[in-house]
Image 1 (cartoon, rainbow, N blue to C red):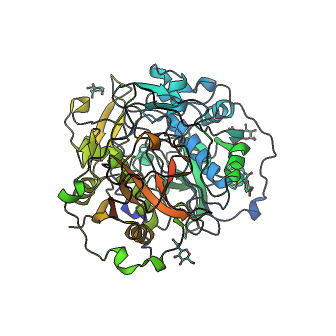
Image 2: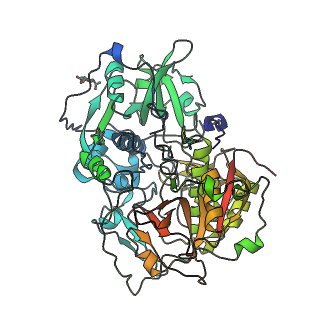
Image 3: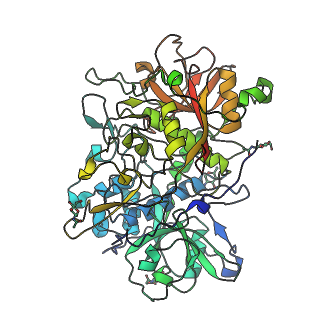
Length: 604
Ligand SMILES: *[C@@H]1O[C@H](CO)[C@@H](O)[C@H](O)[C@H]1NC(C)=O
Ligand SMILES: *[C@@H]1O[C@H](CO)[C@@H](O)[C@H](O)[C@H]1NC(C)=O
Ligand SMILES: *[C@@H]1O[C@H](CO)[C@@H](O)[C@H](O)[C@H]1NC(C)=O
Ligand SMILES: *[C@@H]1O[C@H](CO)[C@@H](O)[C@H](O)[C@H]1NC(C)=O
């Protein structure tokens, strides 16, 4: 298999950022608490590795770095301290799982905004990463599929009831409810503490990424790449970031490698370098670390390389709830022209060329798949078509990139905003691919998923603001503040797109080029699925739901199955995923699938 390796950072366009950012959200804890159970790492400075980068780590060169986020959309929010803490923790959760392939962990900053009041933490008005770790130590934190980032906190009246920690929304009734605590997984923190000074920080970084605080200057806001070196001498810390490594460049300049929460369009694809050893911007004065809970590693271990399987009893749907499925409009395949310019994989790969089992979550030990999603929060939205397309395409971008470097989670919201294939009332994947081919879409840091048609929101028509935006406080409004369009954000296209059906053709397409989307005839039994190999022949039923397929396998008793991803949260099925029997057209899964080949430039 061939990969075209390229660096996504080359795509950073360096939008002039200074005009976008004001105020950041680090507010030092009034009572910094530490819980330290084991002795701190003490490698002598001379024995430390000279370079460290968790985006390309260990013998495999695999990336453990979680995706860059944007704290400033859909409203302005001084939530940097939460993003710094949760992104470093998410990386460490995956590191703790060792060499076994592990899917991305996307912890929910929104739950912290709703709930964390430790040591003066004040939602979007700022706080301290050490308090976030303290909160997670005592209460745990679920994944983003429980609570979507909405950039509002308890400082503006948000509550912290069960529904504010993990929610799901029903179709039709407009009613959202709390997900039962026994159903979703909360990640924990074993111990946590403070660290400062170059040597101690380098030592701590051997255990994984850390959060640190910095003073933000205009030059830092305008940073587009290279090693940042502040000359103003300011150390008045007002912002938190996470550090994912360090190194030394050809000229002998030592630097830290950081990840910001200002979007992919800032800096080097959202990341930055800053001089190391001179307390530049105060970066060596105040950092925070946390060790993830052992229970997570243990529960992961018990299930081996497989995703977490939780034994949850299937519950019948309440009579007043309409089904969750229904967002796929069929008939797209006949009416939307395909755009195929290179030979289709099934024309050059025969069944004999294909392995008996193949899974993009574990190819030679590397996981290539991107975020799991929940299309139904913070309100019901029939956007499965946009989720399936953007998940499969984001995975394929990651595959093109060799599984290294920044992970791009493409934005389903932009497709919905522009009716690029459909709306919250449903849509067609083929039409979405055509939209992406013609217009390109940005990643989620430009336009966060909001489960709503946003045309005309904020009293404006859906112009550039609906492609890529950022918000900052103005004289009369802290939140939402004023939102402006970001100019020339990185956009991602497809060079080709088309359809595929039938098991052997689907396998060839998945194996050669990456995950595909497929329409299925979902029903109540599928909605109630909790694990195992789903089986239900439905030869003539209409497809009504889009999922993506990332591989296949064969059970001990010889049953071949597909490995699929849904967009109904990670508490559904097998950690958000499912297996379905192959060949007998179960739920019509082999009757109509779609694929796109990602491209960094527009191809006519
Ligand atoms: C996995 O390893 C096999 C055998 O070494 C190799 O042919 C294949 O290209 C590798 N696949 C990926 C995705 O790296
Ligand atoms: C997690 O489990 C793996 C596999 O047993 C083990 O190698 C690793 O050391 C554990 N990690 C931690 C942080 O306990
Ligand atoms: C830096 O760490 C040392 C040792 O843990 C501690 O005594 C000192 O107060 C810290 N300095 C700051 C500025 O936090
Ligand atoms: C400030 O933001 C509010 C809310 O978005 C908006 O209504 C108002 O027009 C803004 N004021 C200025 C001066 O931009």
